[in-house]
Amino acid sequence: MSDPSLPASPAWFRFAREGAAALGAVDASGDEVRWFDLGPLDVVALLHTGALNQQDLSDRIARASVMPRPARFLSPVPRGGKILCLAKNYVKHAREFGAEAPSEPIFFAKLPDTLVAHGDDVVIPHWLETRVDHEAELGLVLGFADPEQRGRKNLTEAQAPAVVAGYTLINDVTARKLQGQDRDQKYPWLRAKALDTFCPAGPFVVPADAIDASDLRLIMRVNGEVRQDARTSAMVFAIPQALQAMARCTTLRPGDLIAMGTPEGVSPVVPGDQMEVEIEGLGILRNPVVKELAP
Image (cartoon, rainbow, N blue to C red; front, side, top):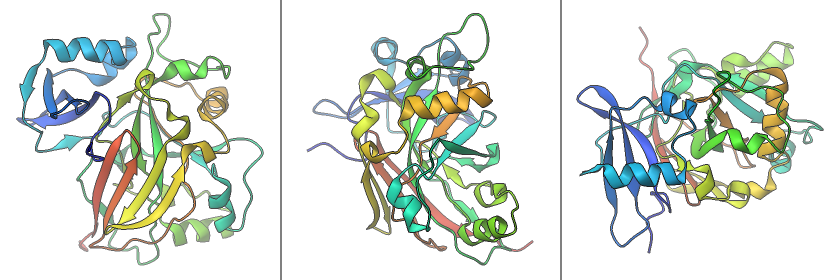
């Protein structure tokens, strides 16, 4: 039986080696799991060339040295790119908060310092005493060869899939009560989504041409208990529609992350909890919840 914590097809990841970032790959598709050191490569630079598709990754694995499972993963891309997230992209999730799905894609941003890796702590600020929720989501890692410019804008739905380099896992952690308070005051609710460490992502990225992400099972567990369980086919807006809407407003660039929205079942987490996002074929993202000590 395959290990659900590992991707079903060869995938890439970033890891820490002697204090520096390196690129690795894992192949769990055969009888044994094999880990590969692809070298101290700049992932964003590779994504700018259209690299890390299925064939390119296979070629790199063939030339790579074998290594043990890394002790520490890094986020799929380094901090600095955009993190854009779909809101209310599952009908039942919208309804669990008394709303209906929107008539067009609605998206918001998370700030770069929200981004943390598999295994890293999600840290609730010392001053925040109200509800914090998990949100399991399918993540897109953008990447494409674009010799004329460093990004893409005004995409059609037909063009949009070509800017997706791969799929990963994201947990859009949200300060839910704070979000509601800001909404009631007609304030923007950026801070509820943008607290440091509130965007775990990874650990693996499966090339977009290696898997069909349109109907994958997505599960969130907290301390082993299933809280969310849905399929990506239930999304209101599919990947091409979401990217087309985003590209009308902002330039999409290699290394950007897109979170495709969360299904119903969001619920509170507290310090000491262990969150676990599982997406069929992509693996498992685990992060503990801790409380920041007061300064």
